[in-house]
Image 1 (cartoon, rainbow, N blue to C red):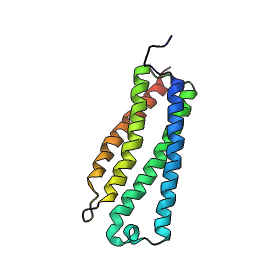
Image 2: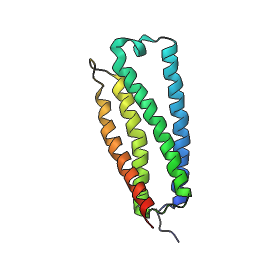
Image 3: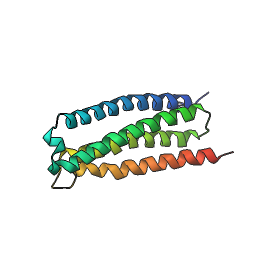
Length: 147
């Protein structure tokens, strides 16, 4: 019998597959929106003075798409039978989800309001998201080393 409040690996697998596929849809749509801004020559996006905005939004799209795929891979990895302790699994899951939100959000928000050539304060979310991602990747890599 499982402890109350403790999820099984299959629950986490479903969560990350669902998060990954919906995120992939969201960031693919964002990519289409960015391409439309480019295609319609929208000055707010293309002007040289908005180069920082364009970079930040491109990074938001790229990181969001990559992290969506990381969530799908993690969900499938859990289904493959990788053993991660329940406490560690909860932390790894939260780290992947946090990174999936904070990294692209930091880049997106950093591009909303640009100060000269510098991104806005939203970009401060990026290092936190990156740290969460690295910790989750380390934990999963460590779990693959167990006999």
